[in-house]
Length: 349
Ligand SMILES: Nc1ncnc2c1ncn2[C@@H]1O[C@H](COP(=O)(O)OP(=O)(O)OP(=O)(O)O)[C@@H](O)[C@H]1O
Ligand SMILES: [Mg+2]
Image 1 (tube, rainbow, N blue to C red):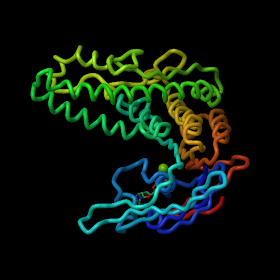
Image 2 (tube, rainbow, N blue to C red; image 1 turned 180 degrees about the vertical axis):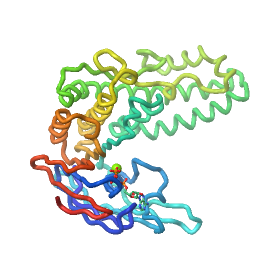
Image 3 (tube, rainbow, N blue to C red; image 1 turned 90 degrees about the vertical axis):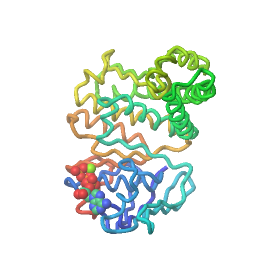
Image 4 (cartoon, protein in one colour; image 1 turned 120 degrees about the vertical axis):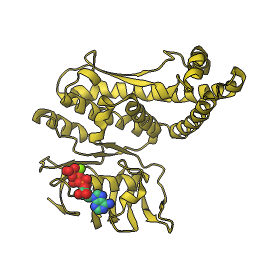
């Protein structure tokens, strides 16, 4: 799929902007603080109605304005769909989003915050794998919401030092939804592994062996009974500490480069390239699941990479469909559409 056109009104630092991108590679360049990331954010908002930077809707409207709008045309094969999304401030100062959605629209975003997949706490890796699983399996995020509710209720109960009978129904629910989540996360991890094994050597230009594994207390088990048994093993500890100690909320991803923990020993460039490769590794699984190639938004994806690696990355991303790549300095890539951004305005470079 691709974005045929987009119009912004009072969105971030843009008063009005009308942009007709290329269906392939778009290079968006310009000095710092001109609106490159803001434009990517508008593209993501058009596609899926969410920002990748904030959950505060009010941040999206230009300062001092009480509404913002993004509209545009999404295309895939012979179909096209016009989408309009708005955020506006209500009388009680809360912000509200409105607009129709497009069930086949998919977007994959890479930004500097993705370095936390390698350098951050386990929660960052869980958020990453849940995002991937959510784009592949539409039922994943609703199940995650249910799991969080069960977990919160169970944790509240644990603080009252309950007996086994009171906990039993919560254990069952936690184990049932928890196993469902673990199963989808594992499958998503396996898909990423297959793609990563091809992409990382291609972009690094070296024959590195990469590995991504899902790590859970359950080991290889796939049945809710295994999670129930694990819960039973830690029950005393859980009651003493007043919190649930096993389940997908405690799991993690292992990332290795040539058999070594890339989270601890990877160089900064390697970690950035691995994070970018993980995002690129999503393209094919998402395409197969959603029946359409996702739009790629790559924010400053070349920084901290050496010249040779940059060349490999540019070649790799051209195999996707529509790509938007930002950079603070001019880039020349054959066949790419180039745009120059200055203070909330845009012109063909
Ligand atoms: N709601 C808003 N209203 C008006 N301006 C905003 C709003 N939110 C952010 N800005 C401003 O938009 C400007 C551009 O931000 P953006 O993050 O898009 O820059 P950028 O071109 O990606 O820069 P960099 O190269 O440093 O990443 C910033 O100066 C920021 O202060
Ligand atoms: Mg930026």
